[in-house]
Length: 411
Image (cartoon, rainbow, N blue to C red; front, side, top):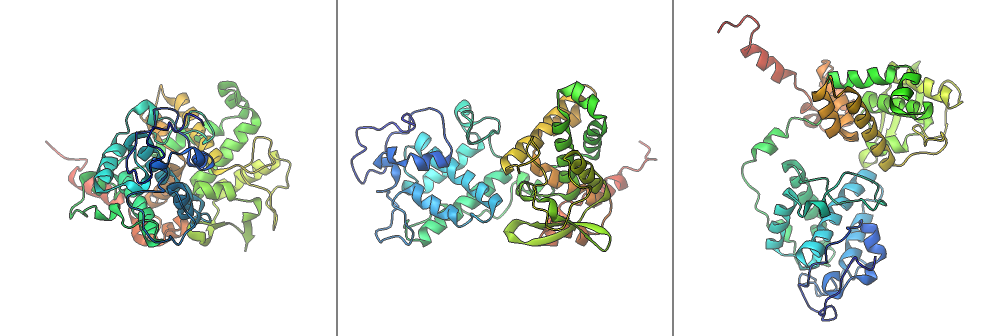
């Protein structure tokens, strides 16, 4: 970490609101920055930031990193929210140091405009962008690429909340994000985002299941998978598609979360916002659960109070982290794309773009396509509002398209 921050001759001068940007080098995740914060020069630490409040803050924070950590701790019981908020705070802090040469508590409205432009196209690309990987990997990068219009909006909303918290805690005097003018209209990209587009088509899912329904020996021979890897991937695919879980819910799922009630199988889950729900388990998934348990040497069906993890490590004993679930699902998508690319290039392209959360969108969209009642789809998705579920219904658009393009149309 000695190269993370390069001090300049002005490091010791308090009250400095702008220093030299950190020299180009390997970017590191927030937890590494927190561990090595003693190496941060005073000009970038935020101790003397131009936006710092003169009164003592209501949080135990003397530096910007400590203040951000205090904010993140408010969300430690919501894993997905925590990861999302950490990602945006992390990106902004790194940009402040490596690109802007300012402390977080020095930022003003013009800096925010500069950051809005930066997240559209982070440059230099080879420093800021890379394929998703473990946070411990030396190849880790803050961005995969420039953010979409919807992701830009979400990032700014999260950071506005961060600065609002720091202002309310008397750490900062003001919130420069609050000065962003709310436009009366929406961009075309944001209007289009009201319809969910990050999902796989029916044909894509059929190709994926067809591949994993092949005999294990054929899968192993074609891709080098062991039978244990094959069974785990197949079970994860079933779980993601039939229950539409979030990645954190997959990681925390226990065998005992599947239970019988009046002869029907259900899945209990403590989801987003610590909301408890019970979801019907379709028989295809339950059949795969039985196969997976048999392979692991367990009883045929889950037992009451069974504590073992559902999706397990390669040895079949330990639970998997949310990050590992994400990487495994990406591997499933990537391997399938490679196997079908010659004959189904469009499906392969969608699979290469997809991620774990696409499976959730896919599952909900396909339930809607089957004509299932909006309220029941919403209960399965565990949405708090029906309006959220409604964006997954595309049948009205298709009926409209069919109406103006009748089969017997004569030109």
